[in-house]
Image 1 (cartoon, helix red, strand yellow):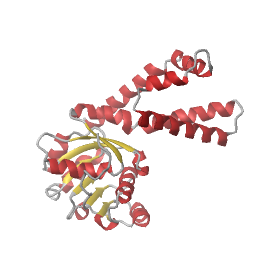
Image 2 (cartoon, rainbow, N blue to C red; image 1 turned 60 degrees about the horizontal axis):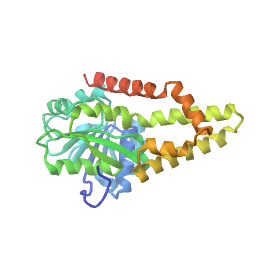
Image 3 (cartoon, rainbow, N blue to C red; image 1 turned 30 degrees about the horizontal axis):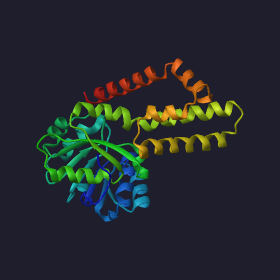
Image 4 (cartoon, helix red, strand yellow; image 1 turned 90 degrees about the vertical axis):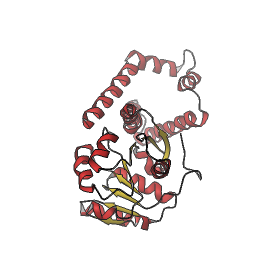
Length: 275
């Protein structure tokens, strides 16, 4: 695992192909780490997005991908899996001097290398809390990628939070299902908690404030303590108390197998997108 620190190189000139939510999250992280806006270029076909990115971050924008990658040390391919092949083939021969990092679900390093005509590729799966510097990213590189290229790619992603290298590429689909899609699962849980509390008469604004802070506090306890989540749960669950009544209801309703099915469905869909 790694967290942004002085052991990683300072991110260098970085080009983003695609200016959507993930690109915005990573750009925000890079700028928090001190990367000058002049070293970031974003290629985005939609004029309105280009204008918004230039206004919000002060980065250089352009419509053409080949223009964006000129002089870049790292090229972040922040486009959807369905268009990745066309984007890579368009850039073929223009990214040989950079390490290319894909954040698309399901697209293997082998395919990226084939489409780009370059073996200098890294597959990454960040998540949207990167926008706040609280992201979680899984990274995979093919055998033979230099330590320097690995460090360059990690420096970009680590600017937005925790990074973990995954040696078995097949497990990147599990990373996608767990942390890539994971924020949506927690938002859904909080949404359900707020609705349930409001149905019991608590004002919705109060319910949302309490649920949000509870989620934040629980996450901090888990991360900062380093303890097993089952043990932390047991400490909250007094025998015969309110928490036990709620937990037993959730388990009787099948929450654990339901979550297992959800992760399995996300893994399967990731592999379909890459297939």
